[in-house]
Length: 134
Image (tube, rainbow, N blue to C red):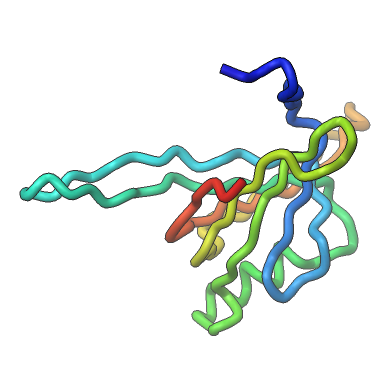
Protein backbone atom coordinates (compact mmCIF):
# COMPACT_ATOMS: atom_id res chain seq x y z
CA UNK A 1 0.00 0.00 0.00
CA UNK A 2 1.41 3.46 -0.88
CA UNK A 3 2.57 5.64 1.98
CA UNK A 4 1.44 9.23 2.35
CA UNK A 5 4.66 10.35 0.69
CA UNK A 6 4.25 8.17 -2.41
CA UNK A 7 2.48 10.03 -5.23
CA UNK A 8 -0.38 8.33 -7.00
CA UNK A 9 0.91 7.70 -10.49
CA UNK A 10 -1.07 8.20 -13.66
CA UNK A 11 -0.34 6.75 -17.09
CA UNK A 12 -0.17 10.03 -19.02
CA UNK A 13 3.48 10.85 -18.30
CA UNK A 14 5.99 8.32 -19.60
CA UNK A 15 9.03 7.99 -21.80
CA UNK A 16 10.40 5.13 -23.90
CA UNK A 17 14.02 4.58 -24.86
CA UNK A 18 15.21 2.07 -27.44
CA UNK A 19 18.79 1.01 -27.84
CA UNK A 20 20.20 2.61 -30.98
CA UNK A 21 17.43 5.25 -31.31
CA UNK A 22 16.67 8.70 -30.06
CA UNK A 23 13.85 9.00 -27.52
CA UNK A 24 10.69 7.46 -28.96
CA UNK A 25 7.53 9.56 -28.87
CA UNK A 26 4.51 7.34 -28.27
CA UNK A 27 0.83 7.87 -27.56
CA UNK A 28 0.53 4.65 -25.58
CA UNK A 29 2.26 1.56 -24.23
CA UNK A 30 0.60 -1.72 -23.25
CA UNK A 31 2.72 -3.80 -20.91
CA UNK A 32 3.17 -7.52 -21.45
CA UNK A 33 1.43 -10.00 -19.20
CA UNK A 34 3.99 -12.10 -17.35
CA UNK A 35 3.33 -15.72 -16.46
CA UNK A 36 5.42 -18.36 -14.74
CA UNK A 37 5.94 -21.65 -16.48
CA UNK A 38 6.85 -24.25 -13.85
CA UNK A 39 9.49 -26.86 -14.52
CA UNK A 40 9.16 -30.41 -13.15
CA UNK A 41 11.41 -29.60 -10.16
CA UNK A 42 9.42 -26.51 -9.20
CA UNK A 43 11.71 -23.85 -10.63
CA UNK A 44 9.88 -21.31 -12.76
CA UNK A 45 10.58 -19.59 -16.03
CA UNK A 46 8.94 -16.31 -16.96
CA UNK A 47 7.02 -15.99 -20.22
CA UNK A 48 5.92 -12.60 -21.50
CA UNK A 49 3.05 -11.55 -23.69
CA UNK A 50 3.53 -8.79 -26.26
CA UNK A 51 4.82 -5.31 -25.46
CA UNK A 52 2.73 -2.91 -27.55
CA UNK A 53 3.72 0.59 -28.71
CA UNK A 54 1.16 2.93 -30.27
CA UNK A 55 1.75 6.35 -31.82
CA UNK A 56 0.30 8.77 -34.35
CA UNK A 57 1.45 8.04 -37.90
CA UNK A 58 4.08 10.53 -39.07
CA UNK A 59 7.05 10.77 -41.40
CA UNK A 60 9.22 8.95 -38.83
CA UNK A 61 9.81 5.44 -40.17
CA UNK A 62 11.21 3.89 -36.99
CA UNK A 63 8.45 1.25 -36.74
CA UNK A 64 8.46 0.30 -40.43
CA UNK A 65 12.27 0.20 -40.61
CA UNK A 66 12.44 -1.98 -37.50
CA UNK A 67 9.77 -4.25 -39.01
CA UNK A 68 11.78 -4.58 -42.25
CA UNK A 69 14.94 -5.40 -40.28
CA UNK A 70 13.03 -8.15 -38.42
CA UNK A 71 11.85 -9.63 -41.73
CA UNK A 72 15.46 -9.87 -42.89
CA UNK A 73 16.59 -11.30 -39.54
CA UNK A 74 19.39 -8.78 -39.14
CA UNK A 75 21.18 -8.09 -35.87
CA UNK A 76 19.51 -4.66 -35.77
CA UNK A 77 16.08 -6.31 -35.53
CA UNK A 78 16.51 -7.11 -31.81
CA UNK A 79 16.67 -4.25 -29.34
CA UNK A 80 16.70 -3.55 -25.64
CA UNK A 81 15.08 -0.57 -23.98
CA UNK A 82 13.12 0.84 -21.10
CA UNK A 83 9.78 2.38 -20.27
CA UNK A 84 9.83 5.06 -17.57
CA UNK A 85 6.77 6.28 -15.72
CA UNK A 86 7.09 9.87 -14.56
CA UNK A 87 5.76 11.42 -11.35
CA UNK A 88 3.96 14.80 -11.39
CA UNK A 89 7.36 16.52 -10.89
CA UNK A 90 8.58 14.66 -14.05
CA UNK A 91 11.13 12.58 -12.12
CA UNK A 92 11.24 8.86 -12.93
CA UNK A 93 8.91 7.12 -10.46
CA UNK A 94 8.98 3.60 -11.95
CA UNK A 95 11.00 1.98 -14.69
CA UNK A 96 10.77 -1.27 -16.62
CA UNK A 97 13.62 -2.63 -18.72
CA UNK A 98 13.10 -5.05 -21.58
CA UNK A 99 15.53 -7.14 -23.58
CA UNK A 100 15.36 -9.02 -26.85
CA UNK A 101 12.49 -6.97 -28.28
CA UNK A 102 11.60 -7.96 -31.83
CA UNK A 103 8.61 -6.83 -33.92
CA UNK A 104 5.98 -9.47 -34.64
CA UNK A 105 2.97 -7.33 -35.67
CA UNK A 106 2.74 -3.92 -37.36
CA UNK A 107 -0.65 -2.35 -38.00
CA UNK A 108 -2.07 0.97 -39.19
CA UNK A 109 -5.51 2.16 -38.14
CA UNK A 110 -8.20 2.20 -40.86
CA UNK A 111 -8.71 5.17 -43.16
CA UNK A 112 -12.21 6.64 -43.06
CA UNK A 113 -13.28 9.56 -45.28
CA UNK A 114 -16.11 10.43 -42.86
CA UNK A 115 -13.75 10.90 -39.87
CA UNK A 116 -10.90 13.22 -39.02
CA UNK A 117 -9.45 10.74 -36.52
CA UNK A 118 -5.69 10.59 -36.12
CA UNK A 119 -4.16 7.64 -37.95
CA UNK A 120 -2.15 5.47 -35.58
CA UNK A 121 0.48 2.84 -36.10
CA UNK A 122 0.85 0.02 -33.62
CA UNK A 123 3.93 -2.14 -33.19
CA UNK A 124 3.62 -5.35 -31.19
CA UNK A 125 6.88 -6.75 -29.86
CA UNK A 126 7.97 -10.11 -28.56
CA UNK A 127 10.31 -9.64 -25.58
CA UNK A 128 12.72 -12.02 -23.87
CA UNK A 129 12.57 -10.20 -20.52
CA UNK A 130 10.48 -7.40 -19.03
CA UNK A 131 11.27 -6.45 -15.46
CA UNK A 132 10.68 -3.54 -13.15
CA UNK A 133 13.97 -1.94 -12.15
CA UNK A 134 12.75 1.03 -10.12
